[in-house]
Image (cartoon, rainbow, N blue to C red):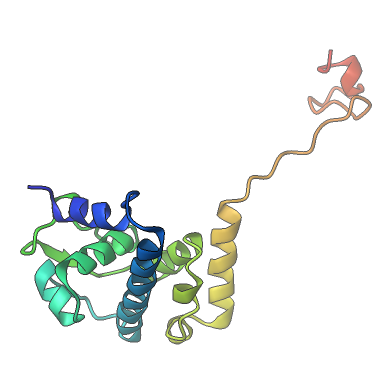
Length: 167
């Protein structure tokens, strides 16, 4: 029998599915995800733990949807869940690292999540801007300034680059 995560991925990333159906599936899922995050972020210091089935019931979702949520939040947790081997009775946690979760939401370009008003209760406006900038900058590749042939050689010889290391 395929694991719950495999089942979730077959549904969520089904390339044979009707495009409109898949768009509706994700739109619905993103609303559910937003709702769960609103609840988690309203009480960010409470450690949420339980079986997959218990958490699905706690948030009023089916087990498959909860598996999708667990897959999405896993890299933001202080201690990752055994996501590949989930069953309804697997003990899992939603104990997240606040800064990491925020930055992962920014990285995923999930503005409906990183713009949730609950974040303003957790971090100041300056902290949110700094986390956002830190995440955005981490994906930016900066090329070093190119040495011109008539520039001083970077080796420190005092010669022009073209007469020294540029040969």
